[in-house]
Amino acid sequence: MTTYLHSRPRARKAHVCDVCSRTIEPGETYTRGVGLDGGAGAWTYRYCAHCAVLITYLSVWFNEDEYVARELVENWEPRTGAGRAVKAAAENRWRTGDGALTPVPVILTEDTETTWRPTGIVLPEHVAA
Image (cartoon, rainbow, N blue to C red; front, side, top):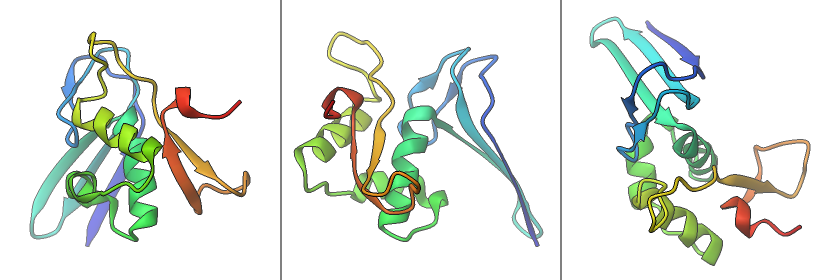
């Protein structure tokens, strides 16, 4: 039997994102998962807030388990300019050319009541006002 615990704590010390390898700085909110698998032992993962949104989007689109997160991002071939901008930002560890942290991506949906039918993912500066 496998036990999972998921949380979104605020970092008290630096951590490394298991998807993009960016340093999660103290004060940032991140996603942490821990598990205990009967035969395989215990494990922990950490996603920065940026990658957590991207993994949610990709796991819904590709009907994949979120635990294959790094592979989802590496194998994703976005079809839109906004999607390509998000993937490029992830590949650059969510940093701009001058080293500033990019905004957390936004999942777009046709139905504002649910995020389970995403239509796209963009960086906030690409969201139409």
